[in-house]
Image 1 (cartoon, helix red, strand yellow):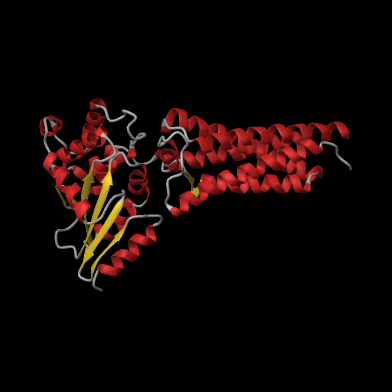
Image 2 (tube, helix red, strand yellow; image 1 turned 90 degrees about the vertical axis):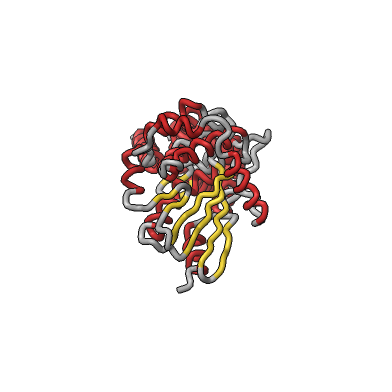
Length: 219
Length: 141
């Protein structure tokens, strides 16, 4: 009797853990959710937020980097809600592509979406569906599927824009800026504002972001 | 009630200690923002650790494992009726949840973390120990 009760309790607790894990894991990956999330926030290429925002945060990331994915899923939404939406901060994505050829392919796809000012929804969808780095998950079908999910993106135009050797110069320029700033890991966040600049190269919690913004925002 | 099964208890204690070491390492890497060292040079551990399934309600799964293994050490220390039933409950929950996590690694995240697989194997072995002890307990009645 007691043993049966213990087994039943174990099954219930394990099932509860699975449900809670799935709630966290399901993620808001649909295009509709992404469209709603970015609604009302100005987007200009790889810049997100109002042009006159006093603080600029440069996000050095690689689309294949697992911790960039974790940042994008767990902290980025709060960063946008707390600081970008009200115009205090604008974000600039500095897309690095150093983990492998698939990083370049993914970066070009996102930058092509940026040509239509749809970089950020595509960025979110790429990270929501991130696979293991260099496992071959960045296929044409995968990228096209994300493009079709991205609200407002003209997929035909996007295909034309990402074809060939486009965006090579942009990616090289980011790499040069990263090297000049001593950035050699991702994600690295550089904060620039009226009170100077600071950098986070080992991001472990959201408080680091808040305190870095407070440090440079001039208030 | 005096219980036999000194080997079972010792095995449970040893397994739980290994489990504590593994989960403590993964918990530390989580909070320090570091990539776990993955044998073989693959990025599977990093991918799994950074995945959206690495936390439950914001609590790292590795920390849940650490608490479970600490509970198993307590179980082996107490032993007796309460200790054995506690150990059986913890190891059964741990085994069921580990099975789910292993399923996620193989079919959803599509990356394998050796530390997580080792922990899952240890958890299954602790269930074997506590099941044997529970069986012995019920037969002794």
